[in-house]
Image 1: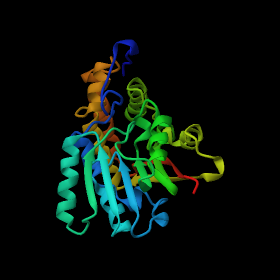
Image 2: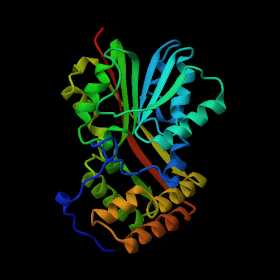
Image 3: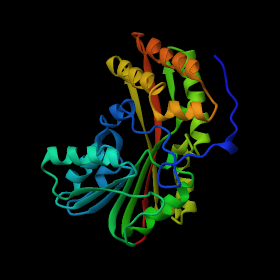
Length: 287
């Protein structure tokens, strides 16, 4: 497989207005996996802290599956989901309408780096797989801290791409991870964000005694490994990640097709297994 050289100075990307590039984008190949997420598998570290009647902000809510679960956990409280994509917000609203049991749930477009809410207006701010895509995660954490009431929580969870591992060995997956990290860095993000959450929170003004760090993993085997392989085989050629790889000069269609085929070959193995570690952080605002 071939490698490509990046001239970062020539590349500019937008995601959240003027500030952020979302490396994955919102192609169907991406939303297929986002729709499978639940609070149980993505926010279990936060759920014991939630109480009925709380007001919660979900930053980077995507299609709203985690947000819906969080709204049920704090009902009859209020939950606001925010994202940069109008299209994915429309999908989240449809999901909430179909559920019919969460009248306190709403969605709106917002910039994670400049949240359009008054100081101290939420009991909890949650962000799942968001900080890794931001050019200034410390600034985002300061914003989250600003809108949390005294005694409230900022809860963040991000993957650490360097921890991803799999069996059996696959040249295609190794090439994919190397390329993904290069694309994410070129987009201004930090693909290993999970390990930096506590450090970023300290820089954002939280005290060490107010931080609770943890970690949890996702793992795929059997039919789930096959599904995960198909998701990434599609993302490798039909997603913003693929387009950014091309536009940054990091890959061409031939390389992306090779990576896609590598995913499918790996996922067809009966012993296919994939694991990834996520850093988690509960940061309490002094009351």
